[in-house]
Length: 324
Image (cartoon, rainbow, N blue to C red; front, side, top):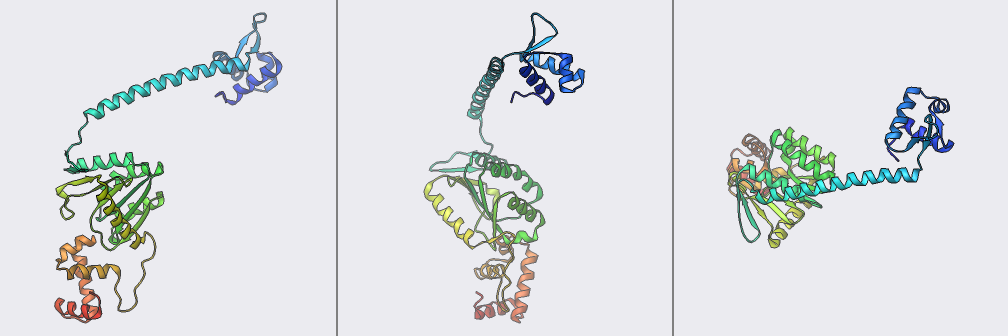
């Protein structure tokens, strides 16, 4: 309780029980090394827990625990006061720095809208909003990321989870074939986050505590920067969009249902839907988070299952089967 090591506490308790002992007697009582006992006596004297008798300098006397503890607590209270004063000084200094701080690439907005330009501004804003979050962070992750980018966000994710913030994310199914992103998602789930996957996502998006959302200015061109939205009407719509995809997603790690003969997987059905809308192979691949080569391989496999000799014929036959 007093922060003493085992021998020092034993010496003090022995003195309390006997109302005073000499060093040699303590060595005999405790069966301890004399040098260690003398060191313990010195430590207790420095802490004002014992003193030497005025009548016999060799006699060690305990100071009343009530008096000793009160003195120790007074010292600790003084230290805490100094720490509180230092904390307030740092808080005031931080407030002064915040008043001077301007996010790089930040463009002021209005009506609950802010624009961020450049990756530095976007990452800085994500770190700030994550740090402020107290209940939940939800997101769409519609891309595949390089290891350096994933590692950059891991510290803030870990800190949020350790604070008890719930993390829910929907990723593209294509992460199963991208080792860096797949490993990062596995780490997230093991750390306490909830992850689901879906064949396609409408955009990349993060919502912090259901109060602020960050999303790209143009989902098709990330170079255009990002927007931070705080307007309630916009957040309601984005939250509803997230819950729709979340409810339809597959929990990460769960086996993907193997469709029966002649049936399509969700990814195949989504690919056909995108192509039927007139998207090129390259644009469809970006939506699905897969390469152009993968898109063309899947189209060839579907055409083979339909016994089609051309893409036009494959489209007609897919329509007859009800695939599109």
